Length: 347
Image 1 (cartoon, one colour):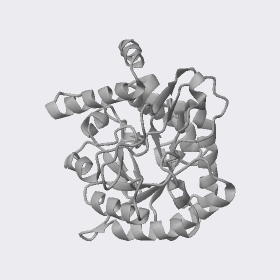
Image 2 (cartoon, one colour):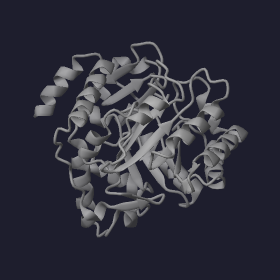
Image 3 (spheres, one colour):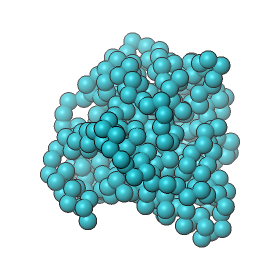
Image 4 (spheres, helix red, strand yellow):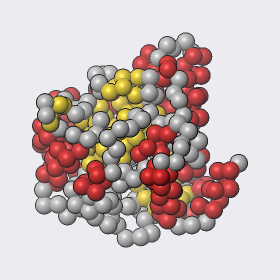
């Protein structure tokens, strides 16, 4: 009830301003040390992925907290992991405003932000040394980079010592030419260089790759082969889509990436595609249209080891992670699974 009142006020504001105020509030609580009632995860939701221990499989997707401003607050909401970024080597303003659009009739969002962030150094300086859950840092290339592979190498090298895992994001539709890195020798060159950069002080930080949903069968097979060849630890499937599947909102024609409920069928299909292409040899993280425990559970049974939330938080509020966590525990027990790992791919 309280969130419905707050949401009404936030929805009266420009979407980007509302988002900024939300992040600022969370960051303020974290800085002030305001007690945040951390949501405990049921023990049977604990899972191990890519050598990392997650209290539960529900995480925050990159793009929500681009500049790593509110990490403790996100963990306190009950999320087993938080992925911040995308961070680029140099600060950049992103694309012109307005660039975030709510589609309430579709429970969706379109954004064309373009990797707006304060840069790697500023974002990494905010990362707490002690934290209540797993932290991923998502890195990208600057729009005007002369050598995008070099930008990714710089990002991985800087983030690896402070992150639990690092994600290479080559899937945003809002940086011209970025998705070209998902293909052929460009992908192999990138993964080879980034994999070498994640080593520090005899530690090998897990490296994840985030891909787009707008891929054909041949590209899916090529990506699967490349990530297995170069020792990538997990695949995040997927980012926003440039397609517009049956939208009702007047904002449907805005350019940018679509996220939220309408993305769910495509995200489910891509999860199945990559599960088949990798033959279950690589952990998969499912993103896109997840807004309930039932949907999260369906993704796990379809082959996802972890799931991430993004747009549903706008429509469902900060209580959503805890509701999904509780619901997942109930669904696992109902079906006789002793752990999340037992349910992965069982559907």
